[in-house]
Length: 257
Image (cartoon, rainbow, N blue to C red; front, side, top):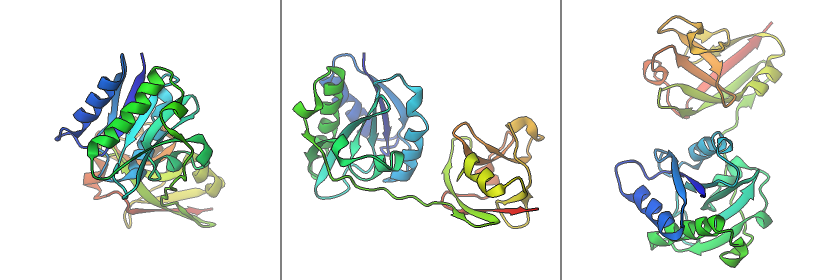
C-alpha cells in the first residue's frame, strides 16, 4: 500500500482537498492519503516548505509527499516529481521544493505540463504521478525528464558580530512563535556569551529553556523545538495573541560578555 501525504493551501471549508483525494483514489489501487495540513496560507510556499521539511522524514520510505500550494502560478504550469532521501515529492514547479532542497537539480525531476485554465488538470497530473509511484511504473513513461526548476526564496536572519535579526516564520496551532534561527546558528554567533532575546521592546528573555514546564504557568520562555528552531512560547498560554506577535515580524537577539 502506497502512502501519500497532502499539504495544501486549500483550507478546510471548501471541497478542493476532497477532489484532490478523489483524484488520487481514482488513479491508484490501494493508496492511503494522510493530511499534513490544508491550512497553509494562500500561495505561501515558504510556510509549506517549513511544514514538509520538518515532517516528511517521519513517514515510511517510498512515501509520496504532495505539496499542492499555488498550483496556478503562471500561464505555463508544470507538475514535477522527484525522489530524494528515499521519499517522493510531487508538486508545482513554483519554488516550493527548492526551498526544502536548495541543491535540487533540473535533471532529478520529471515533469507533466498543465494549463492554468482547467483546475482538474493539476489534480490529474498529481494523480498520474501517484499511480506511477504506487504501481512502480517508471516515471519517464508518464512524464518528461528534466525541468528548469524555479528557485524559491525565503528571508534569512541578518547576522552581526554581536546580534541576530531574525524573522517569525511560523505560528503553530498552540500559538507558539517559531523564528528562523536554528540552535546551530544561535550557538555559532553566541560564542558562549550571555544573550537577550527581544520579542518586544524592554522585555527580553535571557535563557533557553528545555521544556515548557521550565517556567511557571503563564510565563514566557524561549526554547529550541523538536525541529531545531528557536521558539517563543508561554507555558499553557498563547504567545502569538498575548504578545501580539505575527508572522514575518522581526525578533532581535543581542549577545554580550
